[in-house]
Length: 192
Image 1: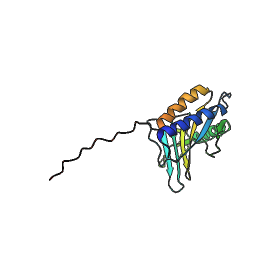
Image 2: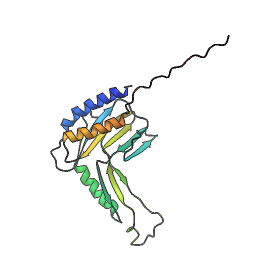
Image 3: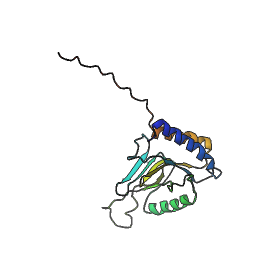
């Protein structure tokens, strides 16, 4: 098992190696970089940022997303159809680089609300709450003992801006704290 500093050094080096492989010449779309993790996390890290986590115990899988690389919202009766069209366009414009061939990919979350007690009349869908597709800026994925980080950004972007943003996420995900020092323990005087 790697110590936090070793893990940070490893992932920082892999991030620097992977950034040149990203095609940043496109004016729109998304780009993702997949970096394998040497060990699979059990639970999603707790970070103070927009996030979600899905854990499936039977399939030994975890998907956690942090930050917002992209988001689309829709409302009303056609909201899911609108987001389906957006998701299809997103899929066609999403370039993903997986230098270690982990098989992991960036993903989005579809969220929507429904009212099972709504009047089924023709105007029932008009007042439904928003729905959204949310693509996290960094994702932690675990499947069958393997794990990876997936960094995603909306284009246009520069390598320097991605390096700064994604290093911020690395530092947030890998808690680096100074080693705790053991407290001095004094011996109790022995009773004679």
